[in-house]
Image (cartoon, rainbow, N blue to C red; front, side, top):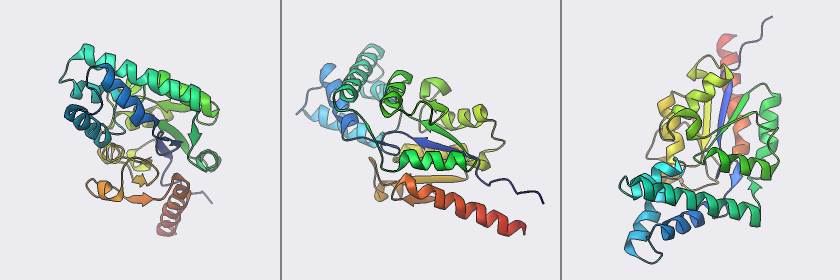
Length: 239
């Protein structure tokens, strides 16, 4: 008897807020970057910029800074460099923690036969620094940043690149998980079978309600049950 293929074959997981605990480091790095380009803390412009940063969590950081600087490429790159330097210092000083159970969940999924890919709005250098700090270099074979794919979220490029890199045959076999509306929009635009939000990061159920999604989970640790239910439903339909 031939075993039916898993309805989901590729699982793409966001990093900060989904598999990696943020501890406020991303927002603190944004504050530093804004100060660096002359948008000081305590000014209305700073408050507006921080609100935009919160709304666009999960997106490519350089693209966020391009918007905040009205397309001034020099200021955007200066801000992005300051952001990355501040975030890197926080990793070196305070370390970085996984969302409780994230590594075990990834290991479980890979053992069960799923491709697992991490995606992030961080640059490749910052992304790899986080992975080294966690000791995850061998846990996840592939991690993607916007620079690896073309455009960052909410565009679907990273998810589609993951599909191509892993040889997954269709977007209908894709599940994408993240903690922001940008993650969910990217999943929807990629045609993912599962577009799941998690409550461990920047955005809330109220935010998630504004964009298409299939599930809202307390944590990434709930994902195996969702995938198991999808597999059971497929098996029942074929029996």
